Length: 90
Image (cartoon, rainbow, N blue to C red):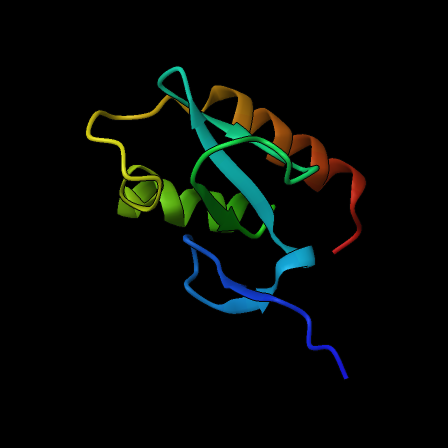
């Protein structure tokens, strides 16, 4: 029996299946969504909901999880999460 990988959301800090979380990477000073989970580098995982994104931003969890010293822009990540929230039923 093969168990599914589990990761922790940097926003709400709940553990969830890796497939249920959005991978985020740092690229050029910005937090970039990596829905295909193929981008190189260190990744952080986040439930793709506005609530978890807001918690992660408020806690400044993304720069810490991605181990970058300067702040990260989040425009593309915020747009991706808003698009997902508009499409997915809750």
